[in-house]
Length: 138
Figure 1 (tube, rainbow, N blue to C red):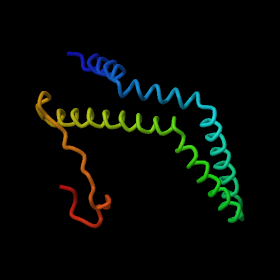
Figure 2: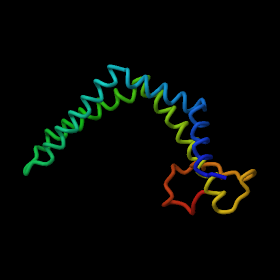
Figure 3: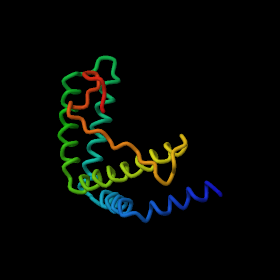
Figure 4: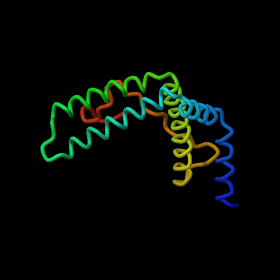
């Protein structure tokens, strides 16, 4: 049994999965979205200006605050873009699928039955997610 060959077959199967196909469509839509790309360019310019100001011996903190405010406004616009929303959702689906696959592989490496092992479901946090305030998730 060639593990690398099987891994490549799994990779090919992943590329046929609807979650992967939705992700590639969303990625392509982002690449073709002129407004989104313009916003990205503006965000990068603001980041560069902020970094240049911050690296000065005596940075102008008002200027830096202005850059930060401008960045936040542009970022909100960027994340509100419909193509970006679709991309984020598709990316979350791919990440979830890959996490699930990796958990199954991890269980198998630790001796679990590959045909029946099932990863623990991800925990919902009723507490807000801060583990410092409780004894952990159950």
